[in-house]
Image 1 (cartoon, rainbow, N blue to C red):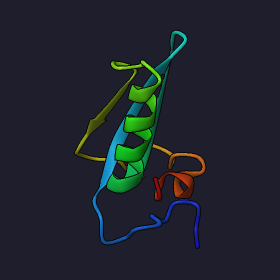
Image 2 (tube, rainbow, N blue to C red):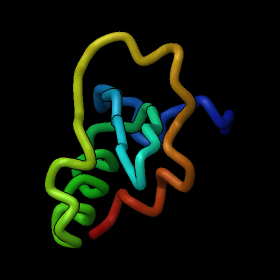
Image 3 (tube, rainbow, N blue to C red):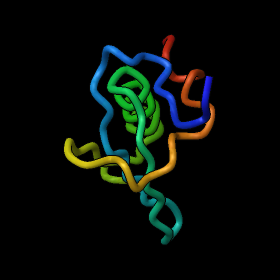
Length: 72
């Protein structure tokens, strides 16, 4: 499987923007992984550090270790 291939090709990909310690990081992830990532960060009190948007995701790298966020 290519590094640019979604682990869940039947799900839409979303733009995941992470703001952490003054730096912004942009990734693409399948919807399930992105929602789990978002929930984990909110549970750690980083409520506004992560945002999800739909749209063109072709310019962003995939979320590192995306598969780790597929199961709760």
